[in-house]
Length: 472
Image (cartoon, rainbow, N blue to C red; front, side, top):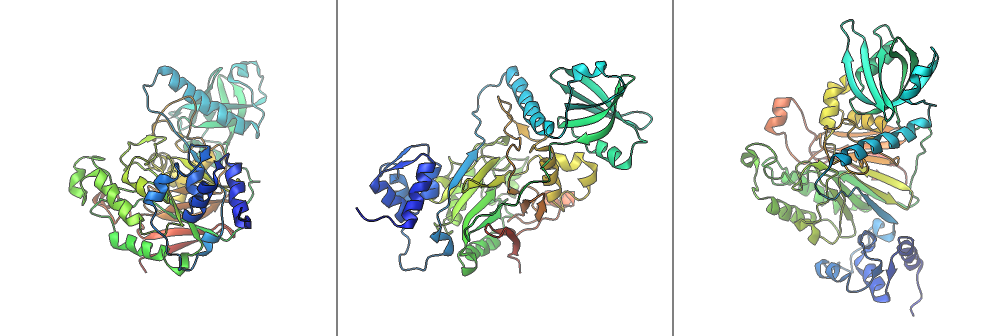
């Protein structure tokens, strides 16, 4: 038997760690065709030549005499965490399970920061300061300008009050509370009300550490291509393809695409007049043709958005059943999904459908939320939920709320708003990746100015991110 190289040993170690048993012939194919990332997301445990046959048939032969890119020299332990939800008839018990799941998961995060009692025990207190955790049931303003926050837990419901004479920061925060978010409050109970003096959210701990990979690879983040739209900027996207094939991109190992890959059909009334490709299947066929120009050693992780053809209920299923599946280097994620590299570095992807409602409902970001897309991203991190208000996205209720941010990401990547940001929030790199679609008539009516042809590239060894502008 041929002696194993260090690279062979690393690949085998990654396969075993992911509970994949590979035959000698299968291992040879994985090495030659660079299928490691693809194999790690397969359902099968035994990886042999037959399972890899479809990859062999679709794989384009790589020129052996070309210079290897830096990113090809390193194997990475890759794990995709999808938020799969099976479509079925929903029952009332699903809604109960969904809201209970949301409450208890977020309660566990809040308990680390406070010592709450249940709402049922509030009546037993006697003008002592107490702490509660509850889901926001109602928000209203009294005739005298005080804010009433009604919250509930599994034991009962209570009305909290924040008076207009409270400190300015607290009263402002009262205006930023969203229906259905889970919050902690501290205050004194008297005359039937909890007089609130502090609001606590699950948020990201201040102690969150900065994590990096120990190998020199980079990732690229894009979204909102809207292939098939009359406003799709094909020339700019071809510039992106040219860049990704250039020397400048030799460290790029992954491209992450956060939804709205195609413009879809029937997404809004009379959409057909805004389409250059009026058939959904053909939109994805053309997208597949464009993406096939990306070097095969670069893995493309895609998730859907609200314009993609699978419906916009969240979590959204993957785009696996589209012509994109013929590409050997594509990996299909749900919306939301997470990618974990080397068992340590987490990239959270969420298209961002809920951000429209968040911008509208939170006064402090209402004016700038579309200009500065990191603002709504920070708000969901504070609440540890991608769609805090039920209905801000079309949530599919089930046994567990799949939109809770249980694990803290190192990179949080979104799209949807068609504007660009690259910022840091408590050691999380926030990326909203702009668009490859020009300004639409709807955006003109809304006064939104998109940032087409600008994308983020992040060196995972240094955590340095930069925006690259293809318009220059």
